[in-house]
Length: 386
Image 1: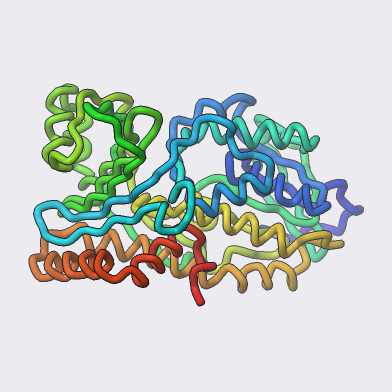
Image 2 (image 1 turned 120 degrees about the vertical axis):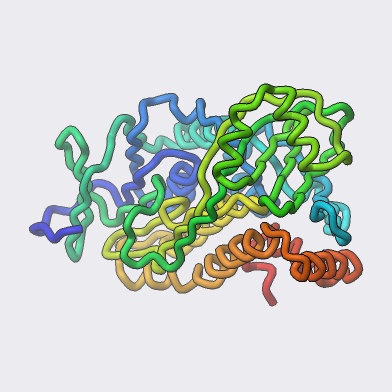
């Protein structure tokens, strides 16, 4: 970022870079608190509906989306039970929605469905969205942020919120880690109804998650990079057999579809704010998909930022941004540490760690207060802390 001469007052309070689910949610949250917002998205109009990702939404995220008027009327599949275990070892634990008087522990939805609901809510609110508007440079002063677009246009605002893109070369990156793993994402048909049960199965190669989606399961299968490449090339029957062997016989798979592969790593900014800038979502932290915490953390960040900036005369004021960063420090730090620790502790075949993991899962199952704390931490983030 560079300094540029002072400019006249901008017409927009907050310019949001990225009109995916995180950017749209932030736009809605800020708009309902009286701030003028504009979204700039590098993609063409309609790209969001074609997003092939599947998102796991915690109960707390549903509450946030309902407050924004953007909860999808159809599409999200409820998770009634979460079954956690490790392959070939003793120890498992089960969390059930009924224990917390909730209709579901969480929900699973195609990202395109959620995008459509958020986009419709933004249109109802009259929020401006610019498509094919790639931000190539950001200049800041003591009073303004200016985004320069690829076609030469400039957009001025009091605050720039970056909600798209991974972290590249951030000098203040708090933590970086290459897990040397890839996630295979696919949809699998099953022989019997899933009854809303989600599975998190830890294997020496990496975690394997089954998330109920319609009548099928959405699968996130973590593997070493070379093994993931080999499995991507397998014929369907051989691939399905390998998946069945990795998961076990608790669920029988009948067909697999829509395989995709993504490299996994951890990158997190030490400070999610700068001069008239704030970073959210993958622009602030990119997490391993284990336990499905990334998007839920982003929505908690969105809500907290909107609360901090409510009716602010100058939403880019350094004092306000510092207050937001301070308020979010505990939840960000603990969620990043939680996912990173799960991967490192469970993605190996060390016999001593295997026994310790089994004992830990057994303790969770036998100690309801401890299990409830972990569950509520996943449902609501830092609100679970005393």
